[in-house]
Length: 176
Image (cartoon, rainbow, N blue to C red; front, side, top):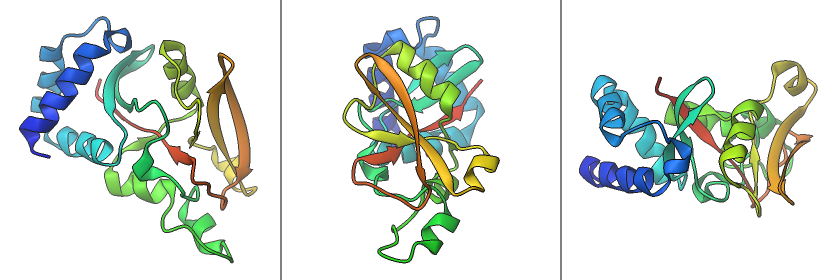
C-alpha cells in the first residue's frame, strides 16, 4: 500500500469513527505524521497485519490503536514471548507477540488501554487478545489476555507458551 493510499484509508476510518476521537481533526493527525516520519511505518505495519489502526483519545494521551472488531488476523496463533515459544516442546508457534511488536516497533496494549477501548465500543467478542503482562506474573509462566462478552470486559490468564487460532494481539503507538 502506498503512503497516499494508507493516509486515505486512515482518514476514511478516522471520519467514520468519530466516537474514538471526538476532540480531534484529521489535520492535527496529519501534523503528527509530518512531525514523526517513523509513525507512518509503524501504522502501516499495523494496517498490513489486519489491525485497522485508528486514533483514540484516551484519558492519558492520543494513540493509534488497532481497531479491528476482532483480534487482527495477521497476528494470531502466537505465543506470548520468545522464551515461551522457544521452550515449547511440541509444535512451537512461528513467532511471538513480543517479537512481532519489536519487529513492528509498536507497543502491546495493556489492561488499562484495553479497558478504555472497550468503554468506547466493543472489541474481541469472538476472539481474544494477548495483553502486556507484568514481569512478575510472566516470570511465573503466565500471561494475560482478554475479550468482551455480555457487555463486560473479561481478563484471563494462560501459560505464555499457549497459542490459539482465535487469539492475537492489539498494538498501539502513542502519538501525543
